[in-house]
Image (cartoon, rainbow, N blue to C red; front, side, top):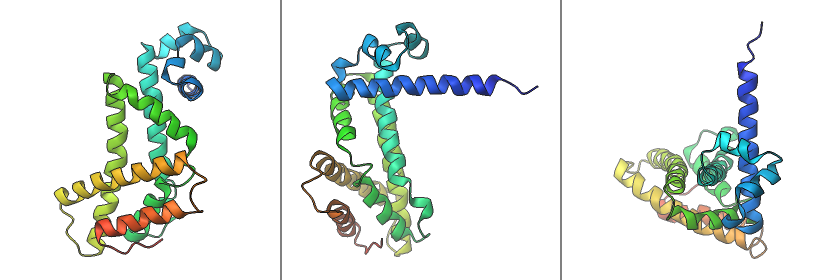
Amino acid sequence: MTPRRPFRREGEEARRAALINATLDCIADGGPQAATVRAIALRAGVTQGLIRHYFATKEELVAAAHEHLMTGLTKASAAALDALPPDPLVRLAGFVGNAVSPPVADPRSMALWAASMQLVVRDPAMRQGHERSYLAFRDQLEALIADALRAADKPADPATTRRLAIAGNALLDGLWIEASALPDMFATDEIRATAIHAFESLLGLKLQE
C-alpha cells in the first residue's frame, strides 16, 4: 500500500503557504497593522485556530511571511542562471540584472518590504528571518563575484569578496527600490544596464550579458 504520509505533509505545506500568502495580502492592503489573526483567517478562508496550529504567534507568522517574500526575490534573481553559459562574467551580469528587473523589481514586493522593515528592528523573529534572507542573497552574490574575479585573474580572497558583496548588495538594494517604486521613470532595461555598469566599475571588470 502506498504510504499516505507524503500526501498529508504536502497538504500541510500548502495550508502553511496559504496562510503566508494571506498574511502578505493583508500587509499589502493595509500595512503590518492590518495583518491581524482574524483578517488573515478571513483572507485564507480558515479558522483562527488553524493559524495557531501552524504558528505559535501572529508575530511568528508575519516573520515567516517576510522571509518567504525575501527568499522568493533571491530565487527569482537566480532563476535564469542555469540557462546561461558557464562564463562567470555572463552569470554575474545575469544575476545582477535580474535583481533589479521585473519580476524581482515590483511595486507590491517593495511595498511589502518597506512595511515589514519597520518590524525588523523591533521583533527578534523578524530580525532573524531577515538576516537569513539577506545572507542567502549576499552569499550567492559573493560566490558569483569570486568566480568572476578568478576568471579575470584578479584577487578573490574572502576578505575582498565579502567587502565587494556587501557594497554590491547595497547598490542593488538602492536600484531595486527605485525601479520598484517608480517603474515608469526609467527606459526599458535602463536600471538593468545601470546595475551591470555599476558592478563593472566596482569590480574593475567588463561583464558580459
